[in-house]
Image (cartoon, rainbow, N blue to C red; front, side):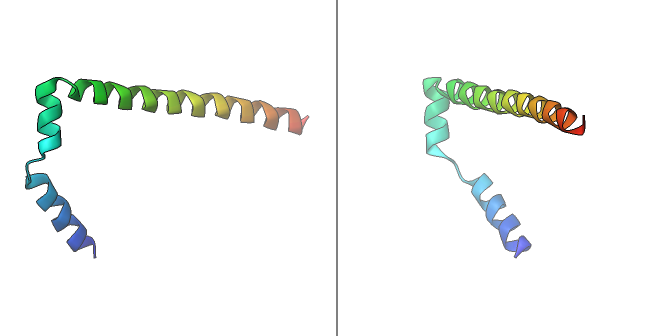
Length: 63
């Protein structure tokens, strides 16, 4: 099963992806990368703030 997954991924990597080529040629590729980066950074910040809030609640519960 894992062997088939690895073979499938390798076959997909060898194919030319027209959409990616079009995005690169139009200059929109970097916009996609920036949107993904902003969303990822937002999720990370949200998780850190949530962790701080939970830690404060745990400290209040111990008292």
